Length: 465
Image 1 (cartoon, rainbow, N blue to C red):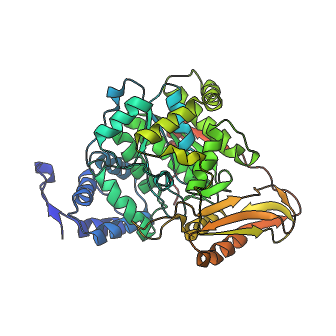
Image 2 (image 1 turned 30 degrees about the horizontal axis):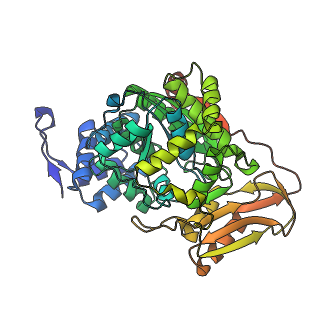
Image 3 (image 1 turned 90 degrees about the horizontal axis):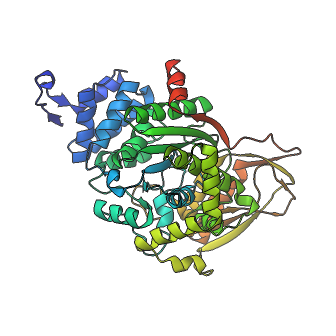
């Protein structure tokens, strides 16, 4: 059992992990010192994994109070080294999504914002649950290095304006441990834990401003709109209190974003947009990326309003400057950009076209089930550290609201091997329903929280329970 003694007289009583597990199990509120003890134990591996897992489950079941979330965020931020973005000579702005299926906006917004004069130090993660991971997608590029030292990270940012990396061993080490544990213990869907995990990494990157993409709907970790609203308000309030200008957008995840979900195929969908193409099936991806980038450009002081930021973002996408930043970033991090021109690079182990099993309008998509279908094709992982298949995934030929004829191609499955096709196809068929009339349209962006809106929302004590 782990125990430490604080040097402060007020905190001289030794702390024990088992006592803190019981306290949270019994709906108690941990003090800042107790939170710091657990975080330090995670970072230094002095608190056993099974005790951290037990505490995470207690926190998931009983929730975390706002003061616990703030303490957890700061303690995790301070659990290792921090990056000083001020040395870059540019305003540092980032975007973070709470996770979705086909969510690939990072490959667009990071180079767009950098092309508009900002620095984008983006610290990203790997596949978590039914959602894909930004780093797993970048790993599909031969040679790409996401594990950079802080000095290498700074060098790429200075040269390219954007860099997408993994956490270094020294940067927010507590989150690296707890993030993997949440995935393995079914404790992902907790507003407090999500808030602390996201913001600890972002604040450790020394950001001046942050744009949050909070997913809601059937493919989000938090399906209920009120849960997503609470998380959005909570993150904005927490980040603003730490001195980072922040806005959160609630966005639709009632269907996959764009036409693809996987690793390499998502990169290629983004590359088409970076090349100035505008395929109809990728329009929601394009629009959301421009809205997010517009807010980044506005908060970063490069546009008077987010609408003007949107216009600047669209210009950078259309004139090739964003593509130039992306390709230079990939090259600077060791990636072989020639594969983007190699039509034969995409070589899945097995390919299968699923034809529409009835005629009608695509009325509903259970996007979480679709995410698990992608994962089980080989694009995701069930255990931390497992390899993922760069070429596995799903290309959707019909979107929500589209009319399809029976027998028409509905989706193409790419799998690691032939024996991995059956379960994902069953999940796909179970996730999608058809109707004789089109569904009501759902706005891509449902609500926006700035600091004032977040504080007003939280003041009404709307914590879901």
